[in-house]
Length: 147
Ligand SMILES: [Zn+2]
Image (cartoon, rainbow, N blue to C red):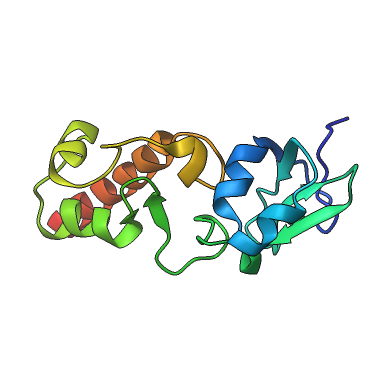
C-alpha cells in the first residue's frame, strides 16, 4: 500500500519533498511543517493538496501561494516557472497561430525558460508533460476551427 493516502478523498497521492511544500505554502505555515516528505493529492475534486499520514498534517488549497492547476481552476497556471496560463497557450496556438510545437512555445512564450519546478510547481515536478497536454488540446481546437 502507498505511503500516501489522502485523508479526505482516500486516493493515493504522489510524494513531494519538503522543499517544494516550503516554497508553495503561505509563509506563516512554513514553521509548522514537520515532515521531510508530503503526499500530494491528485484528485481534482478534493480540497486537500498536501498531507502527511504520519504527522496528520494537512494543507488545503487556501493555505498555498499558488493555485494547483488541476484542482478546478478556471484558468490554471500551466508553467509555474514562467507564470504561463492555460489561456496564454490557447491564445498563442489557436488565436495568434504563432506556435504549433513545444519548441515554438518555448521561443514565443515564457514556458520552460527558466525551470525551477522543484520550488515553483506544486507537484515539484517539471511542467513539461502538462504543457504538452495543453499544446495538444490547443492544436485540436485550432484544427477544429479550420473545418
Ligand atoms: Zn484528496
